[in-house]
Length: 193
Image 1 (cartoon, rainbow, N blue to C red):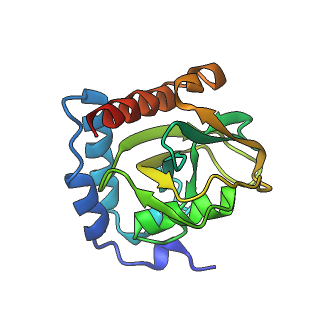
Image 2 (cartoon, one colour):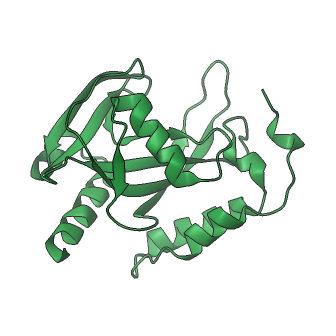
């Protein structure tokens, strides 16, 4: 495995461009998350690796809608024991959309997904508790709004379960603020399109 500290500390220009193009639309929390991620990205390629713990590393996830747009795919995360959107570590890939699609494939078996919104859909910085092998750190999660090309799914080893949830019933599965925020934002975008 390549150690992240062996990489250049040059800023991640494609990640910075992606973040700079994201409009938080007056949401101060989203604006603060964008500023923190832009600062992190100036640390260079090492922030793309899961072994960069101080303060944390960039991850990706997707709010994945069904082909008809009426459902969203959530999985019950095995380690965190919560219903979450699909996503995970970028493992050194500076192309964050490609990394998000890879995570969709790994966690659901869906090989075809398309961006509904060009660019970043949501940002979230959340703490990850310490484990036997890793210290506590943060995930700087860059999120995309995607549509699946198929509704056929499989449950990966990373999940207890995976389900298409009616968009209006996400709040019955979880009250986690970052997920309910994405549900609200996706609903607004669906109304506008």
